[in-house]
Image (cartoon, rainbow over all chains, first blue to last red; front, side):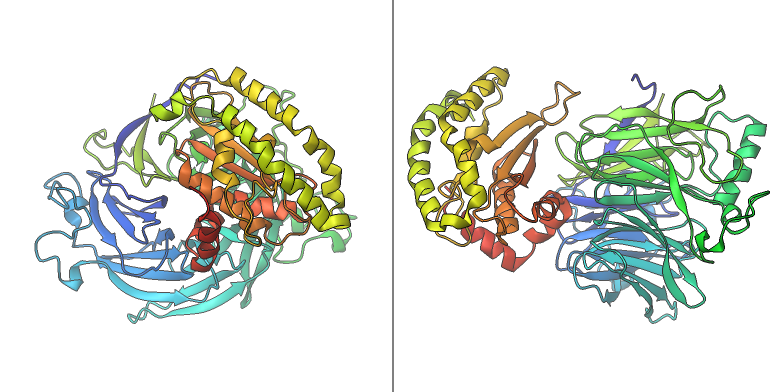
Length: 435
Length: 202
């Protein structure tokens, strides 16, 4: 294996958290990231100059494990945080403040926390509540540590999950009073729920658990319920990420791409998962058509074998090349490039690329052959194009995420991407992918 | 650090030490628990070969110990955790044979990356009775002790020795779960128990 691509370290964020950092959430539109730390705070850094912009503190009594930015909010940033203290915090800040560290290059070098105390607010007039992070509301309901939070694509719903084995769905009433309403509490998982992740376009939630399963949830009439339970991993499933709706693997000519899109449209975005069993796997929904109406000729299927209206059948699409020696804690599927990154306890970052296989099928049975009745789509194959050992020295990596590149080194006019990795020593590194 | 390197033969000292610590308690234990220890009595023949296996492990250790910068060996791990007190009895885990030298191993974590400094410390725990509900707490104590004492390049793999506990898989899964361990460390009550267990460690 001689990857032709490599990761180039652009920078560490400064100053790093002094305790374990669990996760870094890139803002959906602004060049800022939120790093959750065991020091009970969230550090907000600039992706323009990699410096600390502000620290969100005072809300949680224990480690902040997770956070997520609410999408489609204008003029304001809204961050949800989940903590080992069993609560979920909602924080708000006007976007006008802190733009210096955010938008573009000009004048972005505003001193901020210069010197050793990065926790300080900005020097001038920053005492005003209006200009800092406002603690909006505390969502109380879970019995034990909150492990993951996720906003639905519309931003209307917030899903949270916990060691208490439950998933809560809250509706943001957006009434100006920071009211949230509990929409559903799902308790089917038999162990800690480690991760929740919304489908990129639909109100469909995926969850991963200590019970080794992945489950999918949808609303039917008025009730949220489980529509699928995916078994396959042989250990705790740590993290999930969805494919972009429009993703097409590389190396396609137009005909192939069209064929792919047609099939992809039927089954929808795939789901990537990573686990304590050291694997990264991809799952695909069987096209509804093949489930509900017997395809041509397939008449005699007794209805009892067919899933009910809302049930979905998810099947293994593929197991990615086995590149990890210990638990894989995070997987990130780029919405821009379709590249997939994974990282874990072995301190290694791996980036995989999916390409079409054009030659005749070989004996390679990587699980790409569909088992439903639909004509097989074009075959694809995943290869590891980057293997970065010791990406954070000897430390375990807890999270990876893709974000739009925003520093000065980026190529003009190009939509470049960076990979952000978060580690046990509190460090956060920003990487560029190069040939 | 230099004292550790100079002291690359601590095995001799502690070897002499170890049997005297272990023998009397083993006898005491078997009489104390009597017939209840079916599984344990079965394991005693293995224990009686103890000196031999210790010798063996010491030998293989010196063979594999090609790097000078590898001052941490199984004996040192043993010394770190054998003095932890059992949460139930005021007796050390070493004396209770809950931890024992042959059940400790150190291996390179990434077998395919020869120059990686990462090492995995595996500690197999033998609970005093097969349904000991405190196995998780003991395992957590061992893990915490190692995490606090060893450099970050060490990965802990603390598990219940096969066949010695009725819910070993469950306990093992909990002990291996980084997130659960981290949360446990923030739990005041649990950490109180752990701190008491670790009080007896130097």
